[in-house]
Image: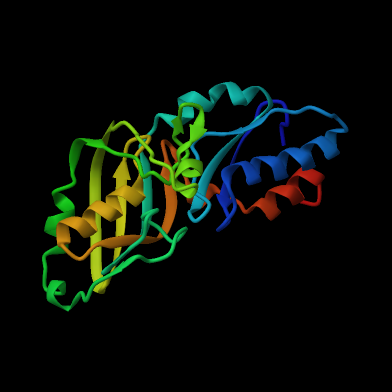
Length: 227
């Protein structure tokens, strides 16, 4: 393993922040090398409730982070229809519940197809976006007004499977900066039932694939020389 200039792929665990992964790997590398400082960074944040592909750059390869972040992303996940939350995912409690029986026969793939293309997306207020130097989610959790700006994104593919209705399983390919929680929320709005993102997993980012990733524990064993 080249600690000076390596890029490793991690399968981020559920509830871990992206920085949790960086911090854990960096500590073990510092211990292995016997140094106090060592650069480790990630290319593209994943929410704590998401799992999957996290690109980690070591040493001199941290200079490549920006170039790694621009590639297309692919995610799989689940939208639960009939329920909504303020955060658009399971970070916050359900606030609206609606019977979904009347929506069961809808053409969900046709609805998903309507998302394909370039569009302006409003980030969720429970996001890491900065508002006057403060994270939006900190303002939202404090009950303060959050004013965010839209950003241009593109959805290239959005395939859905409603065989477990009212759960809608999906695979989506999109550009950098797309909030899948917002897609889930808007999908529920278009259906008329409301919707919440209940599972999310990143499977691809640019040329990198989750199939090539290892768990944090596996990487630590490699770092300390057990494998």
